[in-house]
Amino acid sequence: MLASLRPALLLTLAIGAPAFGQRFKNPDTLGPDVPTPPQVIERMLSAAHLKPNETVYDLGCGEGRVLIMAVQKFKARGVGIELSRDIYEQTLSRIKSMGLDQQISIVHGNALHYDLSPADVVTLYFLTSSNDRLKPVLERYLKPTARVVSHDYEIRGWKPSIKDTVEVSGRTHTIFVYNIGNKNPE
Ligand SMILES: C[S@@+](CC[C@H](N)C(=O)[O-])C[C@H]1O[C@@H](n2cnc3c(N)ncnc32)[C@H](O)[C@@H]1O
Image 1 (cartoon, rainbow, N blue to C red):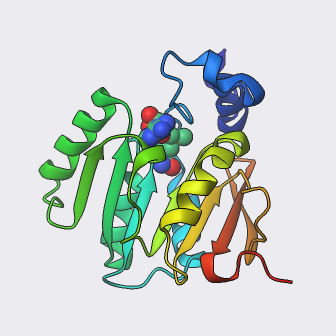
Image 2: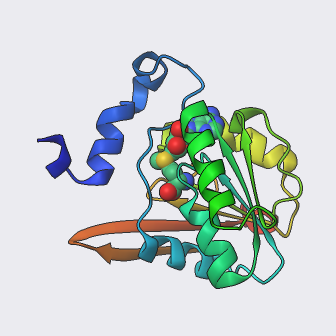
């Protein structure tokens, strides 16, 4: 029955927006492992104007598909931060078996406590309430030229430079792009 639910609904059910800290064993969990469809990833990275040799940080990288596309289609580099040890180990081994470990680093860690200062583009797929928790980290570390792209969930208090939608299998995915140097325009 759950398999027939749409991913955004599943994500919402799994996290439970106001009480997500009580729903997960680990209170640092910002979202469950629900991957972003490739069509959405491509639009996210294009909308962020990802350029060759720039560095993408995917916070909560799951199986690494954002980073793999960033390297293969955009000739960028990737860093993934993943809280779950099992997912981290599987993704690390996948990246190695694909021969992408020179371009992609996977870190087992908590995105809430990580230095993001080298990032040119940061990608997120967490609920809005989780983005509230990440916002001070993004504000602390990101350089003015950095862009943050969030799948489906906004960052409250910031003004997106782009809000776009992508249809995949009958479901509408929303993309929010924020330019760090211009996230609070008058
Ligand atoms: C919704 S999935 C997104 C996966 C991938 N970014 C994508 O878009 O395909 C969220 C991932 O974030 C991980 N995660 C949750 N809380 C985290 C945290 N505090 N730090 C790092 N990873 C986290 C989960 O284990 C899961 O793999």
